[in-house]
Length: 355
Image (cartoon, rainbow, N blue to C red; front, side, top):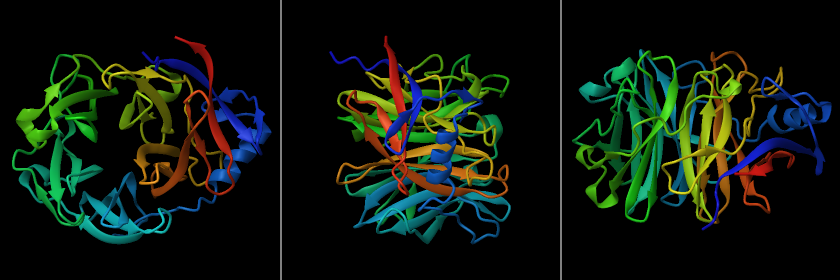
């Protein structure tokens, strides 16, 4: 059986030459590493925000390919509430807004957010959270024939975790289908509403993602904040499978802590182990567009098998929010690393020991 559990430490490659660096508060201290981050991230090729309702605001990205084009789903700030924006693209870089999903049902009256899209049997399935209800927020499901107009699941909300370890809140959904089983990941909080952590549930795909079909697969967090850079929060799981292993890109730290992106690995999609004690994608240096955070990852596998990591960032402590992307590649040991699309600088994880 292939072993998926590997511990690693981060390394940044500068102009093709590995630069061994030290870390302080998630930011490389070597001058060459700083230059690499600045070059790759100060002026990203994809730099998208939604200004339809005023201040530029786009968070929580997720992308699918559907109907011959790419669709980007993201959270937007609407008058008095939070909603979901929809944009389309032919190249994954230039995006045109084409729609919105506004709060509609009574359980959504304060807002909807953090969409996760899945193409299944010729339809777009959207998993999202209610917003603004604190411990009562839960996960919902809707389906669309065209990726723009959605019909809510009549059993909504479809899931929230239970147990003495959780307050029962559910946000930041991600769904991955493996065979005839759907894995539902999300974030919840402890009883004091202080620490954010992850859960997992599964359901038969044939059950249509309805509320009664989900079985909670954990009686404790599958991943919780333990490292300094994660502060009190792990959220926004985004999962793919490669060579028999599940990989999860996740956000560590609350917004603007700064939030940064880490990676975990699993053999079964239930039990998870971090790949590193440092983030794969840290926030940028002072002056860069993502100085306040590089957060809320959304991983997308294209038809040509290229993998992209979409994420959010800002440099003003959340007054504005923008979306960008990096390409995900895999080294000779099947560890993920990121490639800046502007100049090819690479953000690597390097194995230090086998567990």
